[in-house]
Amino acid sequence: MENTPARPPSARLDSYVDRYAARTAGMTASEIRALFAVASRPEVVSLAGGMPNISGLPLDVVGGAIADLVATQGPVAMQYGSGQGVPELREQITDVMRLEGIEAHPDDVVVTVGSQQAVDLVTRVFCDPGDVVICEAPSYVGALGVFKSYQCDVVHAEMDADGLVPEALRQAIAAVKAAGKTIKFLYTIPNFHNPAGVTLAAERRIEILDICRTEGVLVLEDNPYGLLGFDREPMRALRADEAENVIYLGSFSKTFAPGFRVGWALAPHPVREKLVLAQESATLCPPQFSQMAVSAYLAKHDWQGQIKQFREMYRERRDAMVSSLADLMPAACQWNVPSGGFYVWLTLPPGIDAKGMLPRAVTARVAYVPGTAFYADGFGSSHMRLSFCYPTPERIREGVRRLAGVLEAEMEL
Ligand code: PMP
Picture (cartoon, rainbow, N blue to C red):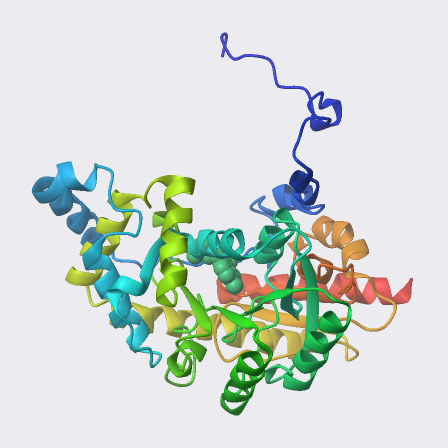
């Protein structure tokens, strides 16, 4: 196009570098971002991204609900709204949370721009530079990015097949306290963990809550996948058993669609008030149109039936992933079999570096996320996250076949 201005100079020539706030030092582009651009080429099987597969959504129903919304409440839907979020939606959110044993008042819910913004607002409200956030090892890359951007110190605590290990949490808390630092909260993903795929066992939930209450550590429970279990009903949320020391985060991104960017935080009342103030300064209000569209969808559609369909689709993909891994991967690899969610966490044979191998995998037309992305401390090089949510079962099998080929070549080096 004739009038398109020239491309801006690259970040390497950044003449603003001396003027940025110190906190931007933690805002670094992922080193694997360039490879991700390659990974999105159609010939590459991407086992990297965590994009939900929403091809099964009834677009006619969604479209009808939105058309109806515009026709009947257009001027309200397109107006500014409350910083806390649309009341009808907050009421419906309490119905969603009831599926996990949470009895909450809509007044304690704050609607956010995805649960990602909820992580940001909670961190903004609680953390000064140098404060400690305890995270599972590994942990969600997007939350680690938020903690870094607020200059928090992340301390990891080990997990095993049953989720966060209570003794590891005790030790992490003791070590941080002994170092004279302040722990602001434990950030935990109890269900179908991103990236580890594991779920916190029921008896551990009580113990973890107990430790945190005794030690005065707040719990930030991030639960975007809780309703996407394959084999059983949703587990009881941590928040269901502890209202005063848990902030619970939920999202419609995986149970409906991420493009609306609607998530929420449920917090003890005084914290909720602070979160609303933080939300007002960040966005004035969460997008009114999106909230009302999600609310109309929930009111008009069998959303629980839709979630059931999603669960069946993801279970089929999980099965494709784990059976292909069993058939094709070198024997020295290990992985877990997740009972819900989107992710398998794979451990490579000793001496194989997932990040170093990635360019060769992309050349072989398969992509994954190296484990180092999920640690704040450079650990994780012998792991990778494999997502089974988006590709078809056939593509998953083809991706695993390619990955196994790359790995075998790597082991011969
Ligand atoms: N938390 C976890 C653990 C996630 O996996 C994600 C999305 N990948 C989010 C939060 C953010 O989701 P959203 O902002 O779309 O609700």
